[in-house]
Amino acid sequence: MQVRLAAHVAEPAEETVGAGDPTALGGASGEPRAISELDASGSSADALAASVADDRGVAPTRSRRRRIAQVVGLAAGLGVLAALLVLVARTLVRVSVVADFMTRYPGEYEIAAAPGIPAWVGWQHFLNVFLIVLIIRSGLHVRSEQRPPAYWTSRRRPSVKISLTLWWHLSLDVMWLLNGAVFMVLIFTTGHWQRIVPTSWEVFPNAVSAVLQYASLDWPTEHGWANYNSVQQLAYFTTVFIAAPVAAVTGFRMSGWWPKRAEKLSRAFPIEWARRVHFPVMLYFVVFIVVHVVLVLTTGMLRNLNHMFAAQDAATWTGFWVFLASLVVIAAGWYIARPALVAPVARLFGSVSSR
Image 1 (tube, rainbow, N blue to C red):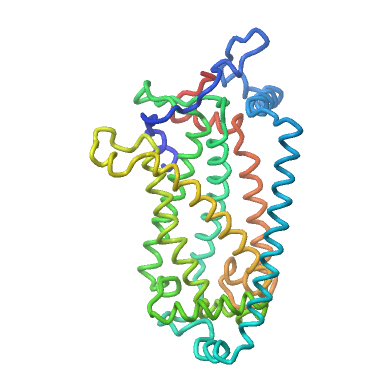
Image 2: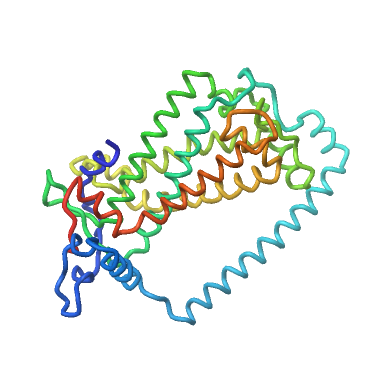
């Protein structure tokens, strides 16, 4: 159902989808070959993968070295900045006024929700991570792609043609949104929303206190089974109720689903704005995932993984093995999400060709 919904995506009027040489998948003569020929065997699939790699191009050695130097310089700068923040935080927490503030606001406040994390949260968490990783991967490919590996054409609207990479990205988006809709229904019908939605203004001073504790390396006590600290609560609230809707709205604006005849609406929300916001929101998700994983692994790994994947408050290995299995599934999804393997799926909902 999810992929079928994406099958009705129209080509955006304001942007070119799948620029480049349409005969890129052709043989030595330059004649294009159908995708069905390319994925008919393992060797053909390898040929398609090689073609895709060629299409992306190989950066010159000098340019690659420059990028590596920039990454190393950025990492070194961030390391120095982190060290300075720790030094400042450890100095501040020794000041009597700050110490009194942290005593009054320990980093969290009481919530009405009962302790415990239901099992459906674990399944939702896995599906969300699985889909968001593939969405980020495909989105980066769409952003950097110069010569699409293939094109997808709608059966209902033959005039609609988009790159295969964009079709895959949009299909994942639809599945992610459906999973999010199920999550919204469940959190509000079970009362779980009280764990991630601030219900008191005390969330802000407690968040400041928790940040100081993290920055000074004297981390707040972790007991997420009963309550998240205020920084966690604000981060989860921002991710679920702000970042996710912004990603969905800006993605919708850039897609063919956007009503082309709504001229006033298009002027009020230009596609250029959507493009400028969509990518930074993706970066936010990357940062959130990295920080989230680091904190899970460094603040009581076994107990945290049991909370997330086994719905139990114990320092056993059950959640760890479920987490490890989920990583295997995500890695398999990452490997499978190649043009040669995506094309047969896309062909179930439209036609796939090399141009």
